[in-house]
Length: 415
Image (cartoon, rainbow, N blue to C red; front, side):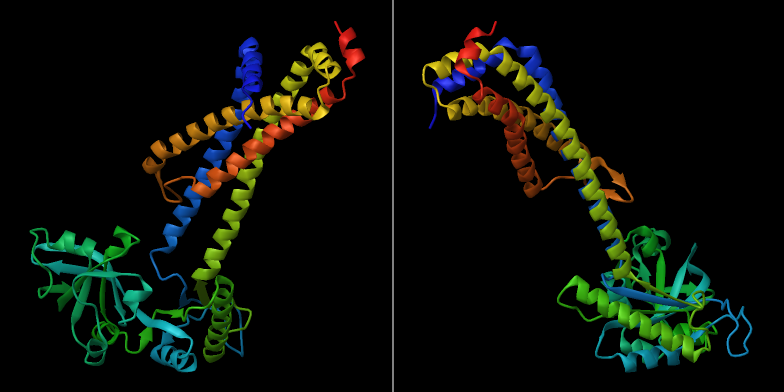
C-alpha cells in the first residue's frame, strides 16, 4: 500500500543531508558499476575464447608424430616417426562407428603458387573430402575435393580466399583456371573461406593421393584429423574423445615401436580437452570477478549502514515520541528499512545504468584476441537488481533493529 507520508518523510530526511546521502550513494553506485564492468569483461573473455574454437569443428582431434625421446626394444632414441596411409585406414576401420568426419593430411613444405605474373608462398596440403567439415570451411565458389578426385589422382586445387585475392587481383574467377604449385599445373575447382580468418584462408588443398604421388610422398602422411559422433552432453563427448585419443595413441606407439611413456613421439591435440581447460579457467575468472564486485558492494553497504545508524541516533527523540504515541516496533523498522532500501536501490541503479552504458558504447570497439564484445545479459542485470534490494535491506537491518529497541522514556531524555 502506497504511504505518501512515509515517502515525504524519506525525502525530507534526504534533503536535510544531501552531501552525506550523495557520498553514500556514490559508494554503492561504484560497487555496482565495478561489478557490471567486471562481469562484462568476463563475458567478453568467454566470447573471445569461444571464437578461437570456431575455426575448427568443436570436437576435433589432431594427431601428429615427432622424434622419439627414449630407447625402446633395442631401438635408439632420436628416431623420426612417420605415419602412413595404413595407420589412417586401420584407425578408420577400428572406429568407423564412432567417427563423424575423418581425413589424413600430407603437407607440402614451401609451396610456391603461381598464376600468370603473380606469385605467393602458401601452405599446400593434400587432404580428403571430410577436411572441409573438420576445418569448418565454407565454399564461396565452385566445389570442394570429393572422393572421385582422391580415387583418380586428379590434379585439382581448392584455394583459400586470401590466395584468390593475392593471385587473381583483376577480379578474375579462379574456378577453371590453372595455377602452378612448385612448377606443376593444377586446375582450381573451388574457393573457400574460413571463420578463423586470413591465416587459415592462405592455404591450398589438393586430393591427398595426388599430393603424395606428385610431390614424392608415396604413402606418407603428416597428420590425422577426426571428429567423433555427437554425444548427449559435453561430459559424455569429452569422455568419448579421451577414450578414443588414448586408444589411438596406444595403437600408434605399439605399431611404430615407441615406448608407452614417450610423450614426444606421438601428440594428440584434443579440442574438447582444450575447451574444458579454458571453460574451467573462465569459471574461476567469473567467480573472482563476482567476489571482487560483491566485496565492493559490501563496502558501500557498510557505508549505508553507518549513515543509517547516525540517522537513527539523530532521530532518537522522534522515535521515542512515536513509540510513546503507540507506534509498533515493526513500523519503526519499516521506516528505517524503507529509507535504506530506497537510497541503496536508486544509487545501485545509477551504477548499473552507467556500467551497461559503458559496455554498450565501448564493448563493440574492443578488438583483442581473447576479449570480444564484452556485455552483460538480462539474467546478470536481473541478478544485480536482487543484489541491490538485499544490500539495501542488510544496510538498514541493524540500524532498524536498534531503533526498534529504543525505550520511549530513554529517548525522551536524549539531548
